[in-house]
Image (cartoon, rainbow, N blue to C red; front, side, top):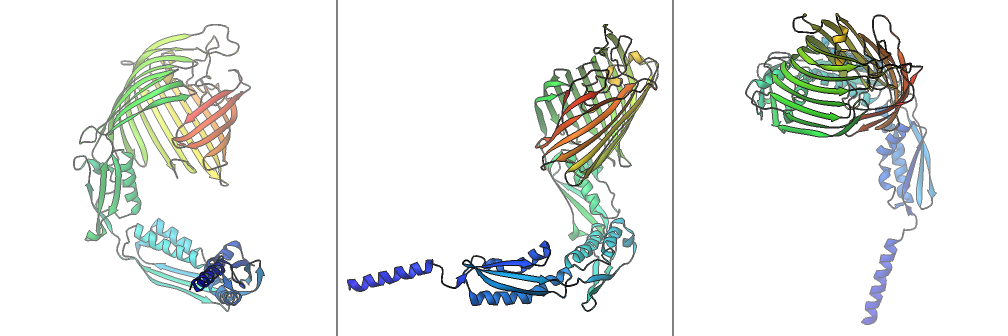
Length: 592
């Protein structure tokens, strides 16, 4: 009995050991496809299913069977890509403990689309989005037939119809006739659009405000043609208010009646009080700390209140702003603020107090601001001079100015975090009403533009320009913030902030009536977050027609950090009377 049990144990151990060893004549299958472009090679490999056998034991007979099956499958695999006459041959060889299957494929001539017929009735065919989608579909004529591309172009038309209110649109006819003998294909499509739906009422839920307060953010009226773009505009407008931590806008298709679709907006209030602050460094201001207290809303009418304190080496300011959103369209609001400023740049010192009241609204796609300013304070200009300066030349002054201001601002961008294609424009006009309330009469016009264009993958071209002009009866009464200087991070790099401009009799920079600046910058990114830049800036402040542009050039590093774009530039002036050497510029903020 003992001997019998020992034999059973030995037999079991031998069987287990045999199971763990590879069996003779059994190995995995390695597939290699030749004769096709990489994309088609990958399509054949993926559709074959042989990757599942790469690490499975397969006998020679099984490998031969898989090989023959794949040869028969190749023609069907390539047909969706427009190849109807493909042939395949190959060989099966042993490679170590694996079977190597080398398949050589001749795709043959492709099928070309000879005609695309796409019909669409009614006003839908005149909509820009639908016309663009139809144009893309018809552009396939003369191209190689590809099922994936065709289906994408076809579905783009259906998507454009539904996104613009034709929710009942159906594809009545969709045929692709292939003539393999002549390698030609004919596509025939037609849509029945049905009626166009309209916007119904907008219902808000979860809001902390009175009924009707949020209607000002709705970019459409009941009865307007339904478009998904305007739903997106509504969501973006509500999100940018900072009132809510969640904004969900959706059409209530289940309750549509008389071609009108109710819109449901589900909201969740955000954090009411916002505290901000911390240390910072700016080459224009030096090291400092910033502290802010904001009330995203203070009552059920949506009023806002924000306050900020800045204590830096060359800048100290305290500001407060109260915002009253107004009912009605165009996101209209009234804003009332006050600001105390103690600025100490390389050329001037200013101690001013300012009151401002303005009205902002959306106006034909622009942000329009109409404001009244009351500014009073003392100042000193002429702190810095040219290399030939030998005298003091400081000029002191004080003034009180009451003036009106109007501005128009607009920008477009494809991405707010990192702009590949975008631009911004700002136009500003200022003027005093007369001599009764102001120390001097003045009028100013300013324009600022920036354009960003990405090309060749990770490169960006950035162009920037600023122009301004002043007319006044007493330039000496204008404080530094109403004079024009050049130099600094956002001006002519290679010079300190406000370091260049017209000179007084002692060779001291005192600022000018006019300003003209241009900049060209090239960026190249080595990774999605790190890059370098080269730039050339030119410009100056000046009086009359005495424009003498100063040049600055240099290199910089770009880092798309979690807190936004950080730019570090090293600039140097070129043949300048205002000095020489290098200047470090650090700037943090969005592209536009």
